[in-house]
View 1: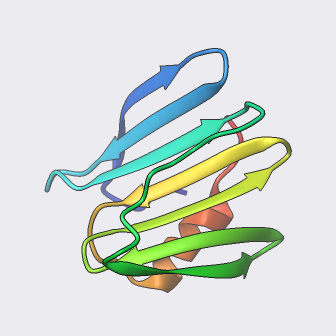
View 2: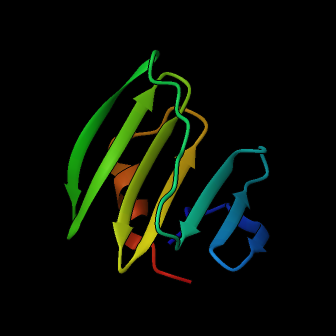
Length: 104
């Protein structure tokens, strides 16, 4: 589930992706990308943080953590998922979000 206080603000759909934006009253944003296509490239600033491969539930997840954001990406049932949070966050909380995400 999306954390308490966040509400769905926008959903954009096309033939290969769904991008859902959640926002809280402080203006914090969670962006969830679900993409179904043969390949996908995502740009991440890898100079100011670190990458880590993790197993979260039954998922093999690539997590990037910096002082400014946390981002995770994984593939499940043929869909590429990317979850971004543009602020510091406890890893346990972020990982619980990943475990709770379902295909829309």
